Amino acid sequence: MAIYEEPGRPRNWQERLAIWRDRLYDRLFHNYIWRSIFRSGYPNTPRNQMLVVATNIFLHLHPTRIHRTHAKVTHTYCLGGLTFFMFIILTVTGVLLMFYYVPDVNRAWQDIAALETNVRFGLLMRNLHRWTAHGMVILVFLHMMRVFYTGAYKPPREFNWVVGVMLLFLTLLMSFTGYLLPWDQLAIWAITVGHGIGGSTPYLGDEVQQVLFGGFEIGQNALIRFYTLHVLGLPLLSAILMAVHFWRVRRDGGLARPL
Amino acid sequence: MAVEVRRAVPRPALRPRREREEEVLVWPDLLFPEFISAVLFLFTFILLSVFINAPLLNQANPNITPNPSKAPWYFLNLQELLLHMDKAWAGVLLPGLFLLFLAVIPYIDRSNEGQGVWFGTQYSVRITLVTAFYSMAITWLLVLFDAGKFERLTRFFPTCSEDAQHHWPPCLTGGANGLGGARELYTRLRFSIGDFDWPQDWRFPLPKLGGFSELHFKNLHLWGDMNINVAAVMVEQVIPLVIVFGLAALLVYGLFRIGWVRTTRDVMIVLFTGAMSSYLALTIVGSFFRGAGQALIPPTDLRVDCGTVPAPPGCP
Image (cartoon, rainbow over all chains, first blue to last red; front, side):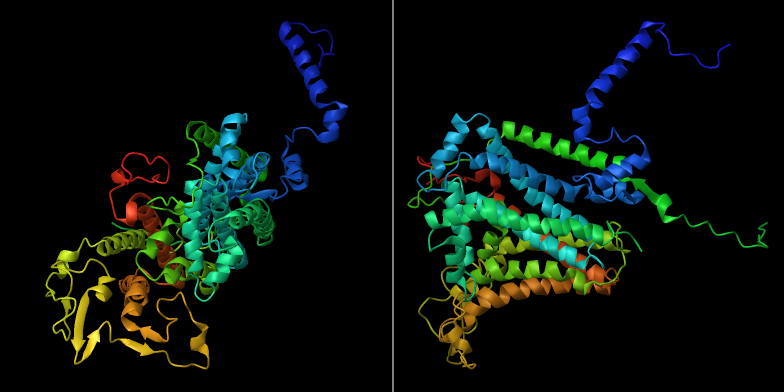
């Protein structure tokens, strides 16, 4: 009676299939190129899973372990993460939209109209950009309400809440500056309302209009300012503040818990 | 017969679980939900984008003003506020104060109570609900009042003519209707104390405060003149602000008196919830209930795209 069987010829078709499956897996994932990208295989032990989270550049935003209560979806509803995800979608679609758009009052509207009709997936990208922008504004508010009602702004997280308020304001500004870019009737008259509101700043009304809108009416100056702020200034500032925001979540000890 | 059981030895306390035992691994317990939610949202938004197109009206034309012109929806609350008070307060100062209030919440409420759990204090759920209802209801009532829906309540004022002087008792010019909004306290209410007529005699030169009056707070209503127009300042600034802050203070005080609000955290919950609820209510009013000339209309009559050429049916 053999205690173990020598690996020999497969006895039936199931064993034959298993051998081919293993060979295929080896070819796909144990080859030189794959291993140069992903140094280890699928992390199927707790130790390797922690190691991956700690060492992978995209995952190392997370701690390796979290408290049981924070793993429940109903604690955070993933709202902060989803807001960030909206920002990523907006960046990707926004870069694609920039290929086809020139911020010139004589061209902007034609560019958008052409984007919708002449560019493959242009309409989809513009729609996606628009709706995720609205989604981000809503998610930012919901995230703030989640943090507030779970008392997560309390010490030692005071300043991270302040950073969050700045990000809320930046999100609104990013959405607002993007609103003008299609240069249609909806855009300029909405921004005209905002122009009037900015001009009603006590003591500094004219200055606000000059700095933010580049003049006393919505024209080329306003368009180029809004464009630059929308595609460069505000996202850059937001990215920096987001880095601070995420970093401080970790530094302040992860998500808030009852003491 | 009840038997009193007395333990000789107190029950051993449960062994406190160590921190490490309460923890789960981020892979898979956090990454998996994150991934699923991201995929769900991505597909939802792609579906939305396939079926609903982003609006693109006619090319911008500075000569054709759509009526109504509306700000983006998240600023429609400010646009709505503009209809009710001084534009500097509505557009800049109140939202600025709101952001400032948000930022300083953690520096006012520095306790650790209720940290890390939903609605951590004893009555926080009910004060949140009561505050949300109170703020939205009052916001709606105030909007309706300024739209003249409650003018019947003030028809007891006698009427008087525009050019008459020395009115007593107080009376309303321009028809038999009662007050159709707070601003009519300035435009239609007339009364006199001796020779002193409301509103035209209530103008006082601005006191010189070491050059301060030359600053010209030109956007704060009629502040930039050499005179303070008391009636205009009352209607545009004092009354709206007293209502906004007074009603908030009233709610906090009332909830404190009945014992639902007990700590600074509770006060913050009331103020935050109230501000957010009013913001939401104003956004809804501005989005769905404001038609041409910012008149209050039912959402079914709404036309938003009258800026196109040719104007769609139903537009002036």
